[in-house]
Image (tube, rainbow, N blue to C red; front, side, top):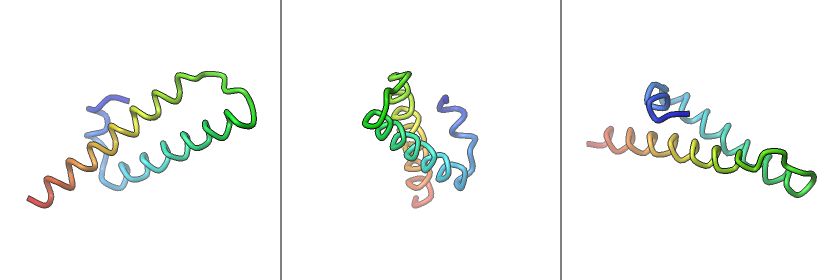
Amino acid sequence: MKAAEVKKFRDDEIAAEAARLRRKLFELRAQTVTEKVKDHSQFRKNRKDLARVLTERSARRKKATK
């Protein structure tokens, strides 16, 4: 997911995407305990996507308060 894609999201879509990515990270961590993870690069990709989403949410909130 690119930053330009995240900027196109509405506020409610950003919240939903953040929740989805957090859930996915939790599932990946649980999967490491219970079974083998097939693709370890998913951890990094999901963390970076979550950071992009949270950064955009923070920027919008900051812009709204001004």
